Image (tube, rainbow, N blue to C red):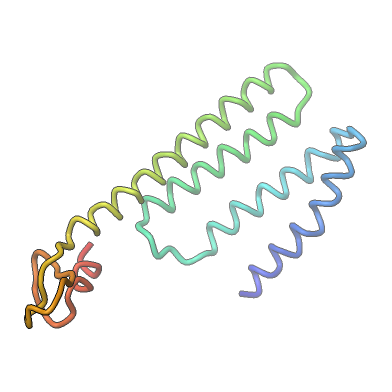
Length: 145
C-alpha cells in the first residue's frame, strides 16, 4: 500500500514538470521525466496482485514495456527514432489487444458455464452450473474456470 502511495505522489510531482517542459518545448528535460512516468506504470503492474490469469499480467507488462520504449524513442530527435517509437507503440498495443481479448474469452467461458433453469421448487428461473448442481447454484462454476 505504501508503494502505491509513493507511485501516485511521484506521478503527481512529475506530471506538472512534464507539462511545463512540453509547453516550453524542452526535449532534454522531457525525456527523463517521460521515461520516469512510464516506468511508474511498469512498476505499478509489477507490484499489484494478479487476480486474473498470469498470461494477462504478462501481456499487459509487455505492452507497457514496449510503450515505455515508444515514449523514449519519440522523445529523441532523430527521424529513425520516430519510426521506432511508432512501431514500439504498435507492438505494445497489440499486446494490450491480445490481453483484453483473452479476458473477454475468459468471461465468455464463465457465462457459457452457467445455464438458466427453474429452481427446485419450480417457482422461478435461477442460474445453475451446467456441470454441477448444488445449493450454491451458478457460483460453483466461477471456482473452476
